[in-house]
Image (cartoon, rainbow, N blue to C red; front, side, top):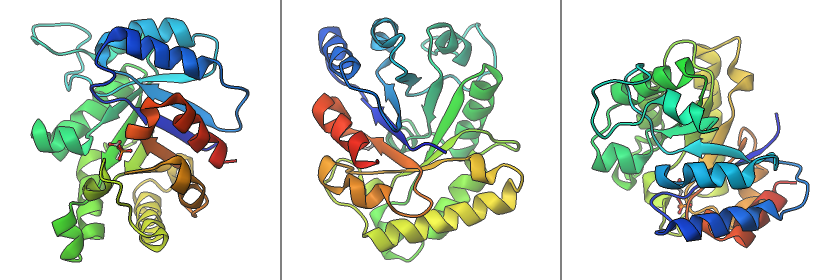
Length: 245
Ligand code: PGA
């Protein structure tokens, strides 16, 4: 499996021109030994899709509707089929910011993963414990619960382990803590999806930067990185990709 470096642009850059400039800067990058995925906001997807066509850089969205309908009376929602139509191949689901601020439950994330897969999108499902949960020694149990509740039967896609307390903070778990969690996730997946667990990449996310990427990406069971802040600077995002070689 090739390493995947995914950029979660979140609600950035604030203007379309900024998103286009970022896509242009990534387009200039040389041949890569890793797979790249960028996930701009919905409003920039069409422009970024046009700019990245033919580069081999995959395009993802940051959410999709939970309904399996391609269209319908769902004000404000965007269906997985609509995203697919734009050239989107992946969709981030259950990011901790959506779990916290949009009150997304495991059941909602699971329904979205089903809808995404039905439309031909690859779901990228995020899990991760809060600081309090880690302090209480419950990190692995919390993540196991999120995996059990968020991944539908027959899941085919990507998982991102993102400790909530490491996102956007500059803090990261130790290499040992990341390795232990990824080993636990790999064991979980092997139990639940014996036939396909080896084909389910598990990314690490949370303050991945050019300076720590090589160490994180070299860990066993780490299939790549989900990068927030550093994905907004093309040079940093590509430096993270280069660190994976
Ligand atoms: P960060 O965000 O790299 O800025 O910590 C990661 C994420 O939220 O996916």
